[in-house]
Image 1: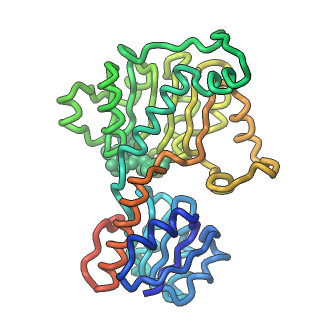
Image 2 (image 1 turned 45 degrees about the horizontal axis):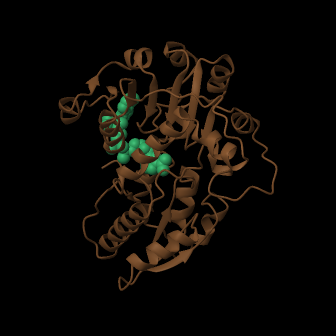
Length: 330
Ligand code: NAI
């Protein structure tokens, strides 16, 4: 079976090739992102394989369907990039990798918390330049601080457990409170209470129409002055101009981002030789109290192995006409 894989990097090809040995899957690797223009590359492929910034809008899905695509497989957990009603109308199942390594993302979020708190990004550069002054590096103990976790699914639950281990008080918000996490000491509270009381707010809920711009001027106004905000979930959860305004006034004291609403034209590529045209993103990079990583939270060897294994399992089930696992929206 021919599978057209979009937005691929050498590491995708390496892990997927290894995982699919002996399955009869014939990969066609495309570095380009899937969009209305590049969809034609999928001609003859029964399945496409996509990543977070591929465009799976109704137009693209219709084009793929016309070219013979009958399955969409995602190399990621999030599926906000897919027009699910359009896929259902066309009879194209969409399968994903719901769980690969919640540890990878949760641990990266913790990494951002520690980096921002202890100004490790500044300390790294300073020491290398022979400057051993501590001025401006003052942090705070995590122990005893209040951490708000928005979304306590696989990743948020793991993040909350780690923060409990640091001795933090954990406030959680989720429409489906996790009894086990509550038993470990997290208190489930309404979002407004979480925002009012937390020293650190970390986002781990999916991007849906209901959660888009969950962090906006109004919700920022509820947060503690000087709060640390961390987003490793999806860029669209945050209204970036509102966050920039709050960074300017000091309302947001520290910001850690692994995702950005308009990341599709920036992340995963080497842009070091070009001019960044996105003024909002460029402004973010000027703040000394902001750390941005380029959607790398998932990027561990363990996660890539698990993503490849589940992706191949999804494709083999389809190839054999067996019931599909991990169908989105099922
Ligand atoms: P999950 O589905 O296990 O958990 C999501 C949780 O959010 C669920 O418990 C759900 O009830 C909750 N939720 C839904 N609406 C909410 C709302 N309005 N307020 C609070 N909670 C709400 O998903 P998982 O695996 O934990 O992933 C979370 C997100 O992390 C994904 O949607 C994805 O966007 C992002 N992600 C980011 C990665 C990265 O590399 N930066 C990698 C993998 C996932």
